[in-house]
Amino acid sequence: MRHRVAGRRLGRDTAHRKALRRNLVRALVEHEQIRTTKAKALFVRSDAERLISIAKQGMEKRAADGHDVHERRLAAVELGNRRLVGKLFDEIAPRYADRTGGYTRVLDLEPRKGDNAEMAILEWV
Image (spheres, rainbow, N blue to C red):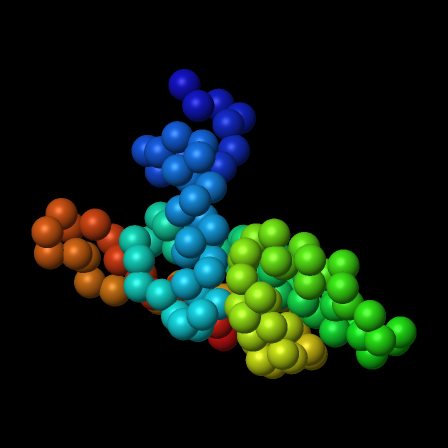
């Protein structure tokens, strides 16, 4: 029984789950919209929202004292790409300056033809 066991496992071991999460978040930042299964979209949603919160904190610090290095490094750990970190901080996060949460949405699609898996689009609001 799975009583009191939090999180989704998605039928993968830990390393594969981490890689999947990181790759989907990178794709979302790069393309601003991804088409995947509903389970994976819900799995990645919290990480994407956390990245926006980190970027917004960096924007506030940059406005206050001109430095956002710590927040950029935190985002770089997740994204692993300078270009994507720059896009997150310079293009995506400023859109949500006046929003307190709910930066992503999951739109349901028709089931996938091959295996009838529930499909969804994960995108920025």
